[in-house]
Length: 221
Image (cartoon, rainbow, N blue to C red; front, side):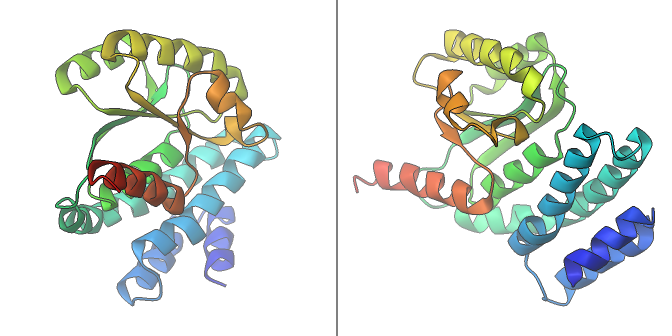
């Protein structure tokens, strides 16, 4: 019922009530942050992107609805950070750079995945969508991340994603971990390996599994 009410508000262009429904559920304990993202925000965002690809919704509507989801995510961020700090003392924590490549503008999914990594205690830097190669280069040189996570929603951006991965490995070394996510991989996960990725993530559970693998590796398990 929560999801249906939320989507109804989005379809009616009712941002105040959409935000209220989501945040009331969080504040009253009906859902936690992970449940809010997994059961409300991610399905709603995926629905919007699917409608956009089918051209069944006006672009302005998709932008407006995405702004609603962003508002809720930003409200949740202090909670995400506080929980992440509690988990940061565990082994296997990484410095992670999250972004979408040039010409990829759908970055809300990548933002939610970056929050999942933050919840698991990692040090996360989110660059957003349409990250130019030169900006990514500057960030890599400055931050020296151990992990690169890239979101690709549009299938036609996979060529740019492959080229970006090649550039990343040339700069940071072949041992850099590459994580991929987004709708561009939904119908064919073999593409993840074909373009040079190491992992595919689409949920909090996937992020937890990867994090636990890093932790076990560092503790010798």
